[in-house]
Image 1 (tube, helix red, strand yellow):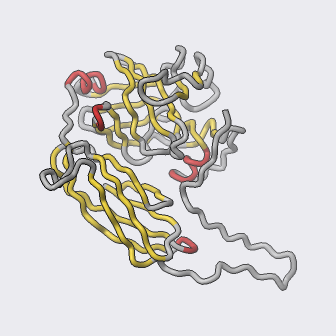
Image 2 (cartoon, rainbow, N blue to C red; image 1 turned 90 degrees about the vertical axis):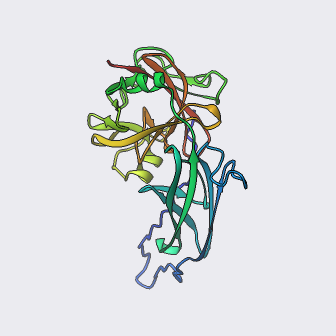
Image 3 (cartoon, rainbow, N blue to C red; image 1 turned 180 degrees about the vertical axis):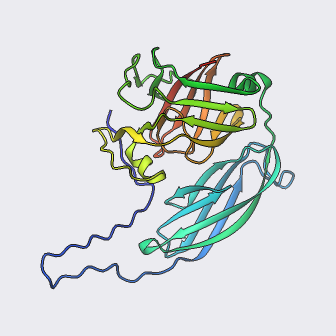
Length: 295
């Protein structure tokens, strides 16, 4: 299986090289993006339901003169959008007003911005047994079920075998920084990722979203041990189109860092085990992780 590389973040690199003392290299004219236009399509919104049908799903679309890429900042979290289109899921119950910071990026990284507001309705209330499973009404620690089959893999979407295209055998990825990670869900909605110093993920997304580490990727574009300290974030639950989904903020992730929207569909669950699905940043693949509770 070969990793398909897609460009998600526009990186400007100035290479200062000279074959002779007479050669000069220039960017050309640097123009600040202007005339930013913004639209928010709240799924299910109509005259009777101006804030949507309650799923929390919104599609943002932006354009600007002389812009080469875009970025959205929502609740303090940055979301890169090369095309200006972003699908976002809000999860706070009720009608909530959000500030959306739209950033248009031009030549040499020069930026201009616009702030707009949207009001979105979320109706979902997670069932008590799901909450109890996740945090035991206090906190609970989870890990990848590395000693069993089908604990990490690749497959099609809902309704099919989540490990149909690739399934890691027991302890197959023991050479990476994935198996010693621990994921702590707290009742107050906070999340702690105990990394034990390194994590496993795709170099492209790690470098773009967190920063270059200097670690060398393998032939699949994976970094086996990307240096990352323990960190905290927040978690919420939602159910777009009836599908139970675990949402993490910021860079927070589970298993392998694959970029994307940091949303994990709960494919199956019991009292002490669950299978999660997340879509890779380039939207080419769905990755799956089987977690087991430590307590």
